[in-house]
Image (cartoon, rainbow, N blue to C red):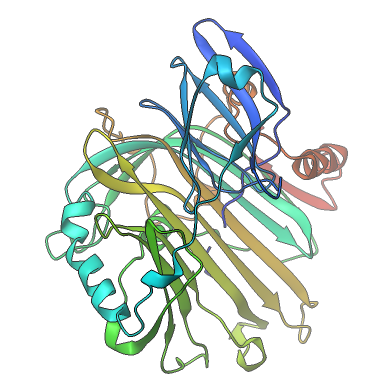
Length: 396
């Protein structure tokens, strides 16, 4: 079975440390008015990038003292390490929403203008970047697999184009840790997507305009436009794809895309693979694009996707739910070094092999282990010798 793919950055302890000439900053970003933590805040300087998790927490290691914070709908903040050192929380001020600028019926012309600017706003030529990727799989709300990857990718283009219809990429894994545990009575293997499918999904941006209805939303700050869309007709699975674009008014760059591919769970039929019945009941994806100040081109700064698959309770398998999430984010964009491919782009990501480096994963903070993942690793360790009951796959 081949299922598709969300994005998940974990808890980090708040601290401040100096190591050699690099500064490590671990803090929380929150809304100034509500004091609630802010997710997906871009944290960056001219060299490095990071992002806050669902708890508003970020970790940042850099030899530059400057940090910038940006999030759509909020005022940008620029601080140096000395200013940050004395703050437990960085607060962002929300921008005023300008409702009077909404023009009903102008949605399609806005989308067409954004599409026309794709060639100006995004790299349609080869470029390279460093990335982190976390994939997790849960079965019945219990973690079953974890895979973290640090790597390099060389892209021919950010999107598929007439010049680059296949948009093939090369990926070089630089570090990886993975582990999975399964009951030997469970004959189901959930296949992770390939890098090829992951990158195609993350870069999905254009839709057939004539097949969708569009609505301009009023809850976005003045610098941006938000256009929601929903497909006019249901597909063969009786579902309607919906989502939204967030568009920068100044250059008509699409800076965020969201797709929800399922809207009516009750009408989703089960499919059969041998004696196994299954159906995908949820599939969502969000991607954020950020402008590189050196190239003036937007790249995919982070992308999250989540899929839920239900196994039917008839036949030889018990009813079960699988939740697969991916969390992809770029740490350095438009770098000079090309990726030396060391894997197959169309291969199940979890089946990729690479040795574990304890020193690397102990020293990085981009993908720290949450308490839930630590409990999962403890569970694996406690059962690693029960070879008659469990099958354990991993490199650490």
